[in-house]
Image (cartoon, rainbow, N blue to C red):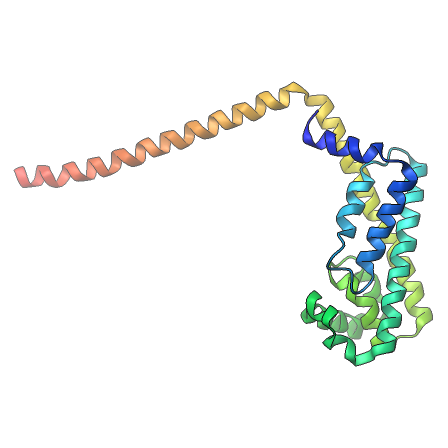
Length: 219
């Protein structure tokens, strides 16, 4: 088994309820302002999604992830509504980057509730957008609807990517088997040969250049 197979096997061996619970917690942490810079929610989601083997589990995982992402958004929105303009100067926003906060504000001013949907797919901005929306005075019903739609789209997209990536990795490894190692060794040998050839040519050129002045002096 290769490294990819080992990882997929380890993830796939986890009890499905535990896998869903851990993945949901990671997503909730990333989408909640204050934890987004500590929790690798998106990476964890892609890895967990590689364990999806049927449509039923796909809908369960995608549904739980969408709910957790929406809950995280709501926490951020009400924090923004509570602290308003003070949010930009908080320690959390400074750690995440005030430039990302400003970018979230620009998107909100330009696109309104559409920015909540777009921001869902932007790293870091995804964590700050709900709080920025709360600060901007956006009505909660509009935010809630756009947040839910964005969370569903984001969840379905990433779970699909993880599922396809996991299936592709398994297929490729099964198809290649030992041949992959032979091809890899051949590539290494070819690369080393090219490097040695270029190095040999490089040493010959200075020698040739040194011989030419000597011939001129003799003449």
